[in-house]
Length: 261
Image (cartoon, rainbow, N blue to C red; front, side, top):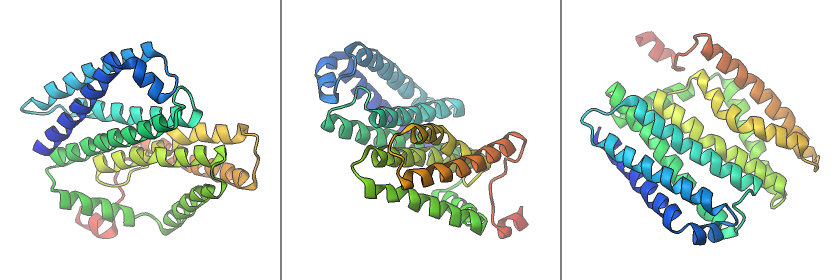
């Protein structure tokens, strides 16, 4: 529990620090980032300060509230997705140093969100770090081989977009690719393995990416291939989420683990 409280307080410190910057340094901050509305930065600053205070109060409780921790983690992941969206679309965040800074801060926020999910799972399940890692590793290797091969191929195909750098196609595709990372990591950290709900980690960022790819004028051969692969992947993900909704919510486990359950 102490580790979770430390992460919550680190999150609180970052929220309050950036919130105060938004409240009292909105004009220079807007110039640094590009051209976001000053009033919006001030409003966001107030929300961050309030969230930081909430984080502190929650961390001081003797017994942590699971739903509060999940709320904070979802907020961190929402921040991550929002930042990736703004960078990809070049809305408001247009200064090169501002883009890099926002991305770096958002990576740190996403790490805090994933860490909260990780330590919450340890707290709920009374596991050690080693036991949790082992459960995740066993669940990962319990995937059907064809799924493993498919995911490897999909990841490699995404990374092939680097050959088009700095074309907007490469920038947006890579941002869409990395956007899934914290979402998947948070769910795996919380569940201690792989469940069908992981499909949401693809659906949330990749449905907009697919729409963008279809609308983008470039029509490179690579782009057409990615559209096809994404459509197939999202169909699998929709089916997985539907099965999860229908009750198939178990964590994938190795045959040895199933035998002991």
